[in-house]
Image (tube, rainbow, N blue to C red; front, side, top):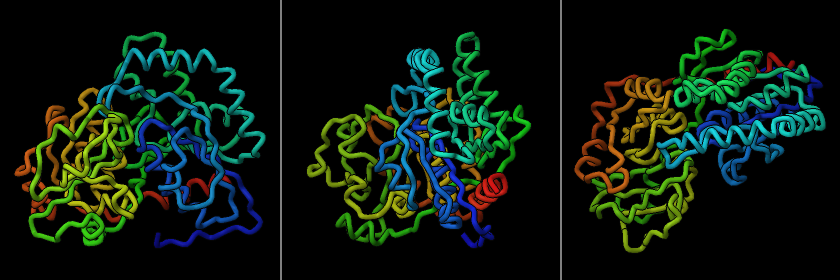
Length: 382
C-alpha cells in the first residue's frame, strides 16, 4: 500500500459492506478496500452482505469477515454476458418491491442486531436506506449507480421510474458517493467525488503459469484469458477453431453454458483450475484478455497494460465511459458476438498480443483509490 494509517486506541467499530451480486465487478471494487481497512484496523469488525458464492468472496477477500447471505438489490437480469432481459428485469423489480416492507425490516434487523456503525454499499440501495433510517453513516461507492443504468432501458416506464426515484434518494442521502475511475459522470449527485481506480493488482507470473499448464516457453506462445465477469452465457468453446500457438484460459469450467467441453481433445483450452495462481495473478500473467466492457477486468487490464478484445454492449449506459478510459492505457479491439461464439482468428490474436510498442506509447496508471476510500471510511466512522 505504501501508507500507514494512524490507529486510534480503543476503537471497535463494525462496518457492513453491502455488495451487489450482479456479476463480479462490484466485488472487485470493494474487496481491496475491505482488505486494506482490516489490515490497517484489525480491531474493526467487518461483515460482507451479498448473494455471491462464498468461494468467490474468499478468492478476493483475504481478511477475516462475517458473511451475510442477503441479496439486497436486483441489478439487471441478463440473457447472456452482454444482453439485458428488460421484461424479466422489470418483473424482478416488481417482485422485490412487492416485498419491500419485509426486505426493509430484514435489513434493519441485520443492522441493529449486529450493532453496525457504518454501511458502505456497492451499490445496493436498500442497505443505504435502512442505515439512513437508523441515522448510521453511509458511503456509496461504485463506478455506476442503478438509477442511471436502469434509465437507459426504461426511459418511459412509470413503474420503474418509481423504483429509480427510491434509488436516487438512497444515493443522494449518503454521506458521500465515491466514484472510482473509470466512472459515469453522475453529475446530479452533489455528494459525489471521483477517486482513483479501485482494483486488486496481481503479479505477472507468466513463466509459472506456463509451467503449470505444461506449455513450452516459446516466443510465439500466446496466453489468453476469456472472462465475462461472472454473468452466465451460452457460449460454447466447442465452436472455436483449433489453435497452434494460442492457449485460451477460461474463467469457468466446463463453461458458463454448463455443456461439457472436451479439454483433453482441445489442447489449446484450459480452465483457471489448471493453475494454482489466483485470478488476479492470471490476469497479469496472460498476454491478451477477451471480455466485455466491465469495471473489474478493464481496470486490471489498464494496470497490467494488457491488450483487450471486447464484445460491445452498445445499450449499456456505462460502456462509453469504460471504452474512452481504457483506450488511453492499452490496445483494444472490438469483436462481434459471432466472433465470441465462433472464435477469433489466431493471426488476429497474435497481432494484438505483440502490440507491445503501441501499449508502450500509452499512459501508465501509478496509483489506486484504495487509500482514498479507506481514508474516507475512517474519517466518517471515528
